[in-house]
Length: 179
Image 1 (cartoon, rainbow, N blue to C red):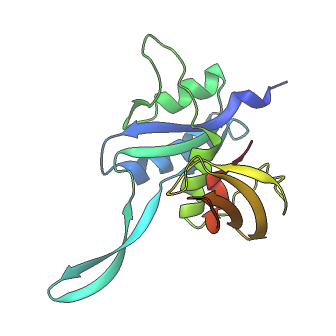
Image 2: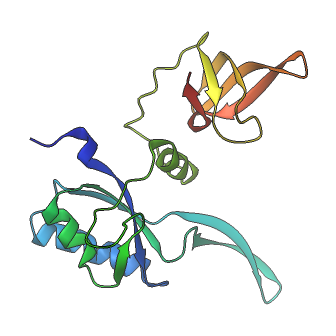
């Protein structure tokens, strides 16, 4: 039986420009080595940017983190071996060498990345409701606390006290945490 703390999102370092090939190889290897229950998702965070070429503007998708691939996996010895020995993978970020297993991304970090990619995040343990007092953990209002007044999709409106006055702040749901 696997513990829930064995599952997490990990960052793979790859040769720059080989991110899509690593994703393809990793998904193929997961199937070949019967690791589909351990290697769950592979994502390459992208963003849409406007580029001008020959006087014409067009939108293109580019990697947000060139040379890195995100993988959601259950960190077993076998899965770790399959992933780190995938062609063009140079290692895990957060591994301290000497065959030590890497540390996963924090839940807030991966939520922010996935939401910015336009993906819905299913595993959010968001028990926030109107009237809850929460702390802002990211953005311009970091470390302010306040009461939630409205929740709409991934946006939270809350009252914070700033310079002695109550102020309405709107933040992303990934930017708040329980007190």
